Length: 417
Length: 143
Image (cartoon, rainbow over all chains, first blue to last red; front, side, top):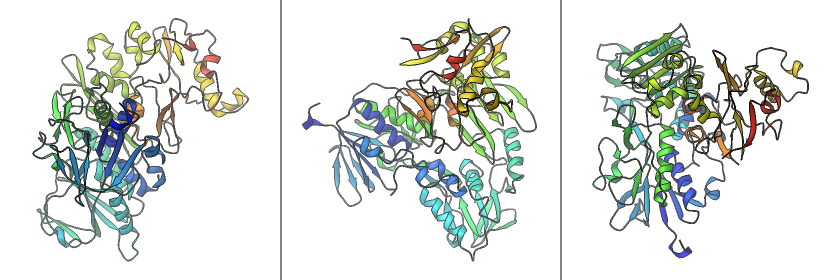
């Protein structure tokens, strides 16, 4: 491509998917103009680190997802603003101030936002926040450092976000209660047994749970449950769930629960790609289309989008649900879906469940001992036939020993691919 | 690009590679002194069963799932070597979830650990290769 017809790439979103796309584009096209548009004010940062920031484990400086010179090194510009509209006919995005910007290829990587149910009386609660962004974390930190305030915190939602928040503020709050409608914690990633083990571990750190709890209404400093029970708090954190930000593509590309993309990260609209938490895509472990709002998938979908936007050839067709997370020193790794027969091996402090059917591993849950978990993940991702390996051995301990000699040579004696 | 390759036919299962790896990390001069605590946490690991043994360490994949999936940007690939920035790693273990070889492991010092081809320590020849008494681990260029 000559200098005058440099491609114009617009990326909406400055998180994992947007950064992945930038790196993907630059693998193919060193010259094209890349503009990343973000409505946040920061350098790209790692969203899951906001709880570590509150805990004091990272600083804003070390939360950066890429080094300071990232934009310069990748020759792209960062535009702080918000896109209000996409005009696919003119191939333009329109900014809040009305200014149009032309694109040749567009990536929508708008992520997700906190979902706040319309609880009665919520507007009377003064000290409240969601927990999704750096702004949220800074706001929560400020509330916790106000001297006049007692520091009893109620977190609504015992999922990944709610519990990471609880860990993050465990030192700076006086009491933490975590409430959920579900009868167990971490219902999106754990089964009942795993949830029990983790719940006990977190309770031992002084956090209180109210499960199967249905909120009736809020007062300024209390949640009143439908059972009549009243939970007092000084600060309320809403971590009920997230919703994909799909609005920009409404009427332009197909949207189901998330923006529908194929393995090349293409939407159904020409020259418009999408990646990350705002999309839904095929989960190869279950064969179903899902929203898999996970950072690794976001990066890889973004990178794949970038390569294709720049004229390269790339397919990311191995997305599966997967999570690695720790709470108060107890680590969990999970992947895939939990259908089929179960291989189970549990102790007081560890938990291991492998789910398999039709000669394939569908998913797993590991708590406590998580070493070499990726060997299981690969069996799911690659849909490895279990009769081609020593399944009994690999159930006991993940390792390459379970593979045939030829397969081991391919893995360890040849150039990796 | 030279890489570490393993020939399980020649592996004696002596675990010396693990000791040389752990020793290289300490930066000390005397091996017995450096490892006197007895318990080591090497970045290369021997798998063994029924007389078969072989060493496993990072393959430094050109399309590294660990680097792409890293939530903080602590894992990077430069000059075909994958390294961890200990200051940026928060030990979430997403890389342990991702690595199909089981070549990244937990550690007690707040960051994950993996083979970095001795780029930060011994320099040049990886310590496991230098220490293998039977040439079961080699450092060479292969297609």
